[in-house]
Amino acid sequence: MKKVISYILLMAIIVVLVPYSIIQMNGKDEGPVQVPDKVKPNKQDTSTVKPDTAITINVYIHTQKKTVKMYLEDYIKGVIAAEMPVEFNMEALKAQAVAARTYALGRATRLYRSYGVHDDADVCTDHTHCQAWISKEQAMKNWGLMSSFKYWNKITKAVNDTQGQVIEYNKVLINPLFHSNSGGHTENVEDVWGGKSEPYLKGVKSMGEDTFREYESTVELSEDEMLKTLKKNNPKIKINSGSLFENMKINGYSSGNRVLSMNIGNVKIKGIDFRKYFNLKSTNLKLKKLAGGKISITTYGYGHGVGMSQCGANYMAQKGSNYKEILKHYYQGVEITKLDLSKKN
Image (cartoon, rainbow, N blue to C red; front, side):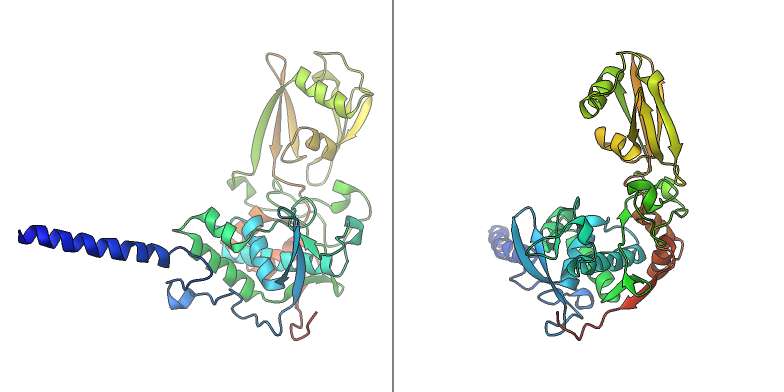
């Protein structure tokens, strides 16, 4: 009988305490979170950023079609969470924080006006136009309960340790383009999009990128499927079915080993357009004819290849480089400066 009573009391304690523990661990902003004091964030996770001195920006959240005013430093946390693997080395995350902050302020000051602006916002969350961004809640949901606090605190540290720091060339904010993996060598900006060159956006070697999964990928397509896609985008192409591979000629490569242009029969197309047609990861590519009327396309790297390689940045960090050294490697001739956060915008 005593055993039965003890069992009933034990179950009653569990029923009371387990829900309470779950509530304490749910990570919602409205309640206190039980985490170690050394890494415990304050209510708004602004840490060293004070509301009376912090710069704010207007962010257009494209998935919700609304504009929200945010502290710049808090916005940067959401950019890092969306743009770079949080498992990366801290120095790589810091480099991303400085690049993201520079870009956001460049947008806010209309420095990149030629890329299009938003009427009622400084920057948007669409990565195809500005920078990707996700909320703290979404980031923590993506990471899961076991890792969410650790990862968010890691990002917060990367942002706080670089608070207010930006990248300048000749005392002007740069356009800090970045990508996932360069395939071993970054690109000159003019070789990718044409136009004028930028001294800080020159191709450089990027070591260690072949150790990442983003380095190499291969797709296989039938010649008929490829020809159909090419003709859809270039109706003037005159090639008969079954002879596509023999009529494909790469005209030249950039210093980063990317295809600048190629002839498809009687039509010349840009390498960046060929990549877009087939949703390829890079223009650093090789073509190979396979049996059964198929063609394989193997690409090296992931992204446009201009500016900072995130995989390369992580490799440099693993080998001992700090974030300033990383940034100065990928953006040649720049300086890392700090904003005067005592001035309100």
